[in-house]
Image 1: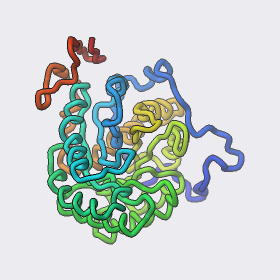
Image 2: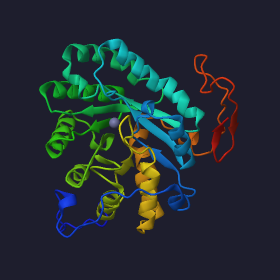
Image 3: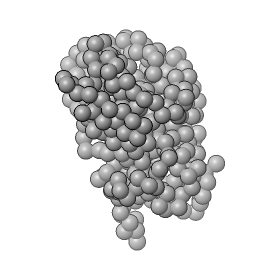
Image 4: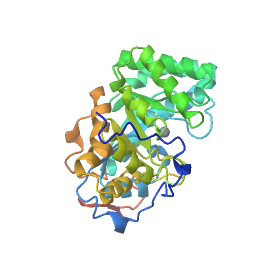
Length: 341
Ligand SMILES: [Zn+2]
């Protein structure tokens, strides 16, 4: 099950500090260095917050072979003050952002959920839970997420449990955000609670893993997602080592790019680095494309024919009367790039 996994190799608890290991955690790679290496590869980013990203990002992602993505519902950097803000945000994930993505040739899916931070505002969380089912069943919603723990408070646990029940009822996979503080404890607790609620672990994607958490996540039958961070935490060099140690089964890579310093091209760059390190194309495809489709495809919402063939976007298309074009702009589309003049 875990290819190349050697039981005798200790799982380093603090990878960067491992004795005798001076390898960098991350390597930034320029487009001219990696474009040839990933030529013809297709990528699926199962965690990226496009609402915070620019049209340049969409164009670069398309050019680098990202054909589809999942945008999880999350917090927006500051606490929302009322239910209407949640409604508008959820509507944008199934509406405008989905349309905007399509205009750049990328298929957009999302997960719906109440994030752990805002679960701590209980009066508002109660109202959000009432409207969530209205969005969970919309077209393009491939899971309940990203949910789980932040500070690991009782309120976070309460709304995590309620949303696991919603996922069961809606027959949707679950995308778990694991906390950055006390990660190991929070990850174990998230998985134990999911199992307690009777979820099939193959329907649960545990995100933001590292070398400390991955073995237990895989051993218990969950999917293990890894967020590649350009400067801190999990870098692409570390990711290559994880794949070398554990193999490709139930592992997936994502960018989690959002409003902070992050890299929407994290997946193609990691794929190129894997290729440089001699990892097979088959393994690269699993962790950067196929496993995400297998996991979130359980929702019944993903039809690969929507993105496996290159499509021409109609840049004059409109969403509720609005297009991505600004006054006087003329779109020029060809199959290698999208330009707006
Ligand atoms: Zn996220």
